Image (cartoon, rainbow, N blue to C red; front, side, top):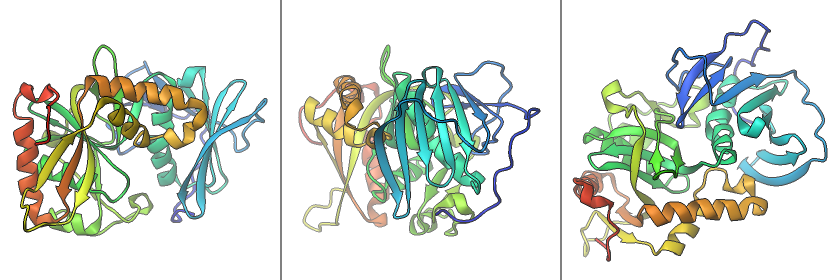
Length: 337
């Protein structure tokens, strides 16, 4: 189970609904999200409601997919006659109704509020995006001079570290952990969770401290950025980088090298980095591949071989900034650089 913390109190009928811009839409919720910026608005793209402790029985449920979060914690996705249900072992169930626009949370008895927020931002909203025809990659994204670039990879591959270094060099953070993408009329990404979380060694290197406080940290140090370091608008996506850390090589001092992937290789690679691909399972594999193929057809996808050494990080960042210094970086190169 995740770390202990005060349980979530049950919402009353008088609960105040607050609006939060996130992932290219507007979330209205009685559950507060300090990770997001609250705004005054009566409209919403998603409405998060809190139901009773016991979720209603599903009509003709069908298991779609599952994901093991930790050794003792998993999440499962079911399809049923009214929509979809995401079931967490520790925080409860989330029903997706009205095409994913209305989300009802049925709390588990000892749900931890910080874990609930992480679940909503980490998988619930990305799943709502996917149900609505958009998508989300597992990665970090920053806004550069020529547009947005995204860095995707499994855990502990350096996505947040690289994003933090780029922000220190003048980029602006769009999102960490989840990169929301809409394809039409052209691929665009949006501000998401704009709070970086670094592993202690990376945080210490960047001068952000090395402590990881609170159950929501997951062992990582939250990094508070200034408003000037945060992107505040939708941004055209110019490139996606699949991080491939390599050890230092004295015979080849290049800190970063990018290799363009052919279209279908790029699409298949992106499928593995979709935030909720495991939950959507084989049943939705065609739709997931279709989204990734469309994205790879519009945006260059590279394997980014980057030296895994903090002492080379500044040079790697300079290389990336050079690649995206002008709008010419939008064209797909013919060879590795």
